[in-house]
Image 1: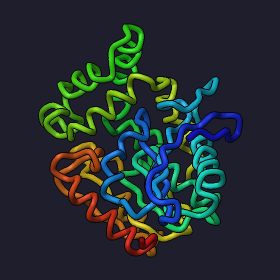
Image 2 (image 1 turned 60 degrees about the vertical axis):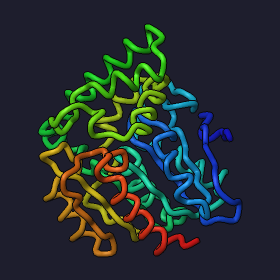
Image 3 (image 1 turned 90 degrees about the horizontal axis):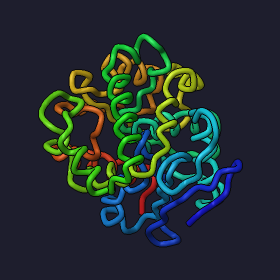
Image 4 (image 1 turned 90 degrees about the vertical axis):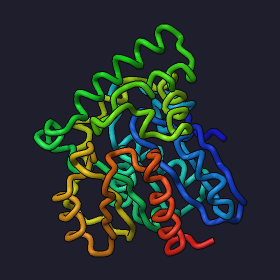
Length: 281
């Protein structure tokens, strides 16, 4: 389905029974709603709302820089127009940042949050510069521009992504990421506006990572040594500020937890436990 919110057309994939407990899924930067396809069969009793953020997938584009607050507006649009009220919110990376700022600004719309390796402290230039993400994003942006200019198919993009070195430095992405995860990357990179990669920097300072998150939830984070985006010391700080948030370190995995061949089952186990607590079917 499509909605119009804040002047932007948003594509939303809706699955599950109309009376099922609603879940809003928010993908990471450069990704799209397809990244959560695997959960449609896993959660048959829930009502899944998977949005393509502006600039991503089949949603509209906006002129100028994409800002974190804009993605919050996208989430608000889904909650108000598609879901019709409060819901639990699940977000990865940029989606986790968006879910956090959404909960801080509109707690009336958020029951609980499930955040997967959210880069909550990337608004600090020194923290961001100390990661591999600036280089990775620059390379990804250049590759996507080339693929889109040459009309490369989503399938061929997925195959190329699978041969690239992983962010963890341990082999190729195809060795770490599930086949459906690679397919989602291919579909996303075939259509994304590469201007979204400018979201990093000033825009992320809209979020104060040390401000309390006013709803309960779970935060999963990977290992910094494997390119996890929420450093262990920052995860401990989030836990101390938000005693109602359960913070769980996932050893042996980096940033892409739900797409990991080795950790998807653990991700799903934690998600089911979260939903049993905050959105029981």
